[in-house]
Amino acid sequence: MDKCEKCGKPATVLLTDITDGKLVEKQLCQSCAAAEGVFVKSQMSLSELLEDFVMHTSGEQENASLACDVCGLTFGEFRQQKLLGCPHDYDAFERAMLPLIEGAQDGASQHVGKVPHRGGGEQKKHHALLRLRAELKKAVAAEDYEKAARIRDQIKELEAS
Amino acid sequence: MKLADLTKQAGEWLRGSGPMEDVVISCRARLARNLAGEPFLSRCSQEQKKAVEARLKKELLGAGIAPTMLYVDLAAAGDLDRRLLVERHLISREHAAADHPRGVAVAAGETVAVMVNEEDHLRIQAFRCGLQMPEALADALRVDNLLEEHVDFAFHSRYGYLTACPTNVGTGLRLSAMLHLPALKMAGEIEKALRAAKELHLEVRGLYGEGTEALGDFFQVSNQTSLGHSEEQIADEFAGGLIPKFVEYERQARQILRERQGKAVEDKIQRSLALLRSARMMSNQEATFLLSLVRLGIATGLVRDVDIKTVNEIFLLTQPAHLQKILKQELDGPARAEARATYIRQRLGAH
Image 1 (cartoon, each protein chain N blue to C red):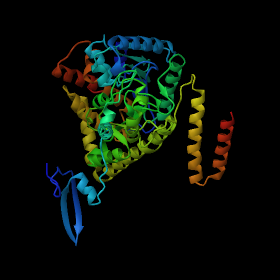
Image 2 (image 1 turned 90 degrees about the vertical axis):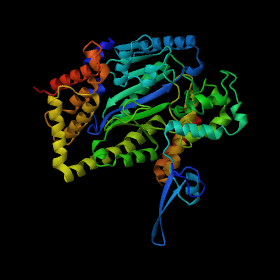
Image 3 (image 1 turned 135 degrees about the horizontal axis):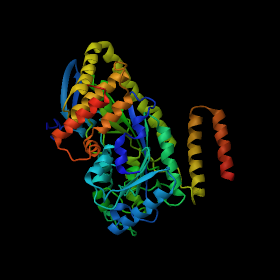
Image 4 (image 1 turned 60 degrees about the vertical axis):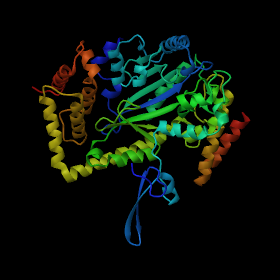
């Protein structure tokens, strides 16, 4: 593989530029390309994304030794196998996992979809409110005030129930 | 209903017709679920896995999902049967190759198939032909609701349905569409299209899912995020916005091809059909290549005496495990090539 002209790392970006009317080609690594103001969009697969985020969050030694007191899995083991051991891991590793989840989920960290039919009454309400509030925000941004008023009424009704 | 019955024809979702079927072969909605109070599979002992499978098998067969349900114990099934299920997209390759208690419940017609003990305890899948994502999603949710009458799934007020891999957490929903993009490939635009897909947070894979190369002109495109939007919003964005863009891109490429190289493309298509109708031996790869061109010919009106359903079905039933199940014997490469050519000639009405 060719080396980056600036730092000698493997080059992953071929930058074609026109300077003083002349075509200039530069071979750069991703970080030197970024320093040149070239934003390289990542084209990583899902597993690469996950690995990348796990690696980022794994920087702190303390995270690696986090352990779930239910299934015994450590965060370090999760890093290697990329699979969690039990539902409680989401709480046990929350501090280390949150950036990972947000990274893999386009910044989201709150579920707003379906909730279980049984014993989920409060959660259902909670999620319905979350969803309505998001819709309200959208309606206001779109200046659809009639719709916004309707959604506000729905929110009030749900809150009072 | 027996496993051997499946080989007689393709599943309903490959035999029917659906919106945008000229480009979208089929679509799938898949929900990941895990039993509350049980470890995920990576932390289950063999005994626990066995108990989870037994429990879920009972629930799946008793939930009233479909009038007839088939349950296949994959640990006991033979290699050929497992490969048959992979070819029909009812189980993943990983599920076929695993080495622990696991199975799959298949509804008659194959519009629903539920994998037990794959990466999660349950992977509920619903299939439809063409792009009918709201219908596929509704069907998967229907199965989920039926199961939830008797089963508690692991759920978190913040993160939603909990999954073994955090990339599926929340709704647990993954949507995919099987696309046929021959014109984009011929026009040299396919790399651009696949790059665009990735920028739109879509995952592109081969025909048989994770880790498989795209075979010929067929691609499986899936969404990547499962958290932060409702199931319906995710489906709406995918099937209402993203996939139709690809359909439009492919249709435009077909239009341009016809305008600029109409005769050459027609020649390729008709030669492919002639070859399929007369060859005496045919590899899977060659059949895929030729059937893809014939499918394009049907979609663009150049081939009128064969329909898309027939091509879809030939494509499935001439896969290696299918041929061997249909003929009820193990066949080596050359014998399969001969059996494949014979079957194709029969289906396409050749002499």
